[in-house]
Length: 306
Image (cartoon, rainbow, N blue to C red; front, top):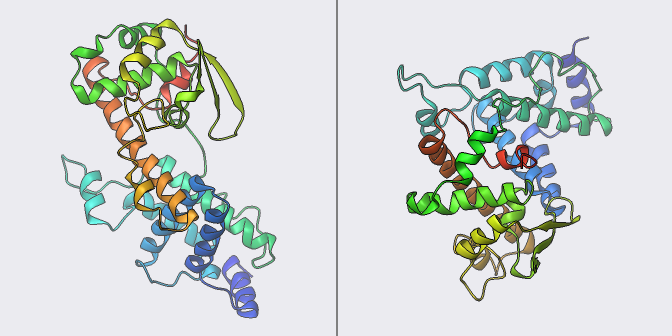
């Protein structure tokens, strides 16, 4: 008896919901638990899976989805096509040949690992029989596609750039990038959420957004100059930098909504800010460090270079 026959037998016995319905239940629970990063990943995985099966509203039978053959077909679809969204296809098209490209290996891995987590939930609840080798033939590796760390010369180029000579839209982005580096690899989400009250003389004392752990960082003189120049001038704001101000309109618009919905909107707004930050870093790299990739992860990998 193969995977599909086993799954179909179980499905018939307990009347399984389809995969889309089950994932929506999981997403709702993740929202209640405020696991916004997981909500984001599960939501986009669900969107991709439903597109593969025919689009929104198309049933995705669990007994069919979790078979080695169907998982391989889904992986191959992501590699070759990846989406039926014409706008996305156009953005990802090969400009020379006009052929839509598939999803990146990291995205494929993310979606497959998410499906594996869903499968493990189902197996733990005895809804599906557990097959430890089910995902062996699909791509689930986690690899860095690019060199994230800069060498000393490249880092010095950024540190000694006259920020005021850059286009205005790039000035803040480079300042935030350098501050993350000078603050020993501070994640962008922590920089964005730094409060004015976190500055304690020559130190910044803050709580990691991810873990809640309290961190103390000494403020180097180079960082102090950047803080003075790019600090938040909005007296009513609690934030040290205007990264989330104004753009955080979701906070004001959602006051009448439930707390879970409001928190989700705030997280999605942060993701938009992060994407915008990374786009500006790409432009900075093109201008100052051709053929070098800059991202919000780079300061973490260069944190101990000085």
